[in-house]
Picture 1 (cartoon, rainbow, N blue to C red):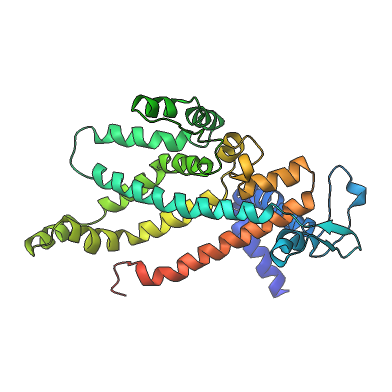
Picture 2 (cartoon, rainbow, N blue to C red):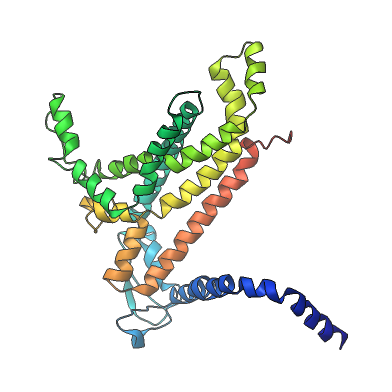
Amino acid sequence: MSDSHAVVRFLRRNAAGYLFLAPWLVGFFVLTLYPMIYSLWLSFTNYNFTKPDAMQWIGFGNYVKMFGSVFGLSQFTAATGEAMHVDRHYMKSLSVTFTYVFAAVPLKLTFALGVAILMSQKLRWVPFYRAVYYIPTLLGGSVAIAVLWRKLFEKDGLVNAFLGALGFTDLPGWITNPRYALWTLVLLAVWQFGSSMIIFLAGLKQIPQEYYEAASVDGANKVHQFFFITLPLLSPVILFNLVMQMISAFQVFTQAYIIGGGGGGVLNSTLFYTLHLYIQGWTYYEMGYASAMAWVLLLIIGALTALIFRSSRFWVSYGTGE
């Protein structure tokens, strides 16, 4: 009886808190946890939402379908005895996405840090410049900006018109050329550097000026100050920006869908992972396979995030002397 009385007293003391938490808890369990568990279950089935009665458990069939081409398979037999074809475009979508992430994220962070350093100087109109540089981040993920970007880099777009005025000839259609299409999206990502810039700027403001003054007295120039004061003290902020921008880059969809024409572009040059997942789920209605792709993406992002945090012990300084 004492245990039951303790539970009742605990609930009475904390009833108000749980009441306020109830909307979040309901949202978490109903809108987040349950869909995740359900999608994990679907990833082991051949679920097609146009034929729900035909759903079957196929074990790891969807995962073999993804990576079968790595082992030279063209088709295989699922757990149900059904013959399934390997996804020939899956590895291409991985390649495009990894190329984008490893190109766009470092360039974006480098550019954002450079602008943040300029904005940290005692210049006129700095608040105005901060607002202007942040606007692309607010607009960059919209359909309108993606359409505008596509128009800019078309064969007869403004970019070619400008380059033609400078004397360049035989200019390609940047969007329709498989050699350059992905890099137009990388450029769009770099243009959206505003959020990283603001975070870098906040970190720069926290570095005591006394460090720079002492370094100047010791004869250190600006380059030495940047590499031996700014970067080490800013490393926790760099870690945060790196993780957040990497996760965001893996989830790019709108720009790839609009600029690539909804199908991955010429020769699948802009077939991003999320776009391929969308095509499998909402064009071919293979929700089981799309769910498996989503879980693989989660594992990839989780593994890379863990790797970054693991490596941070070698290059991130928290000012504790460790």
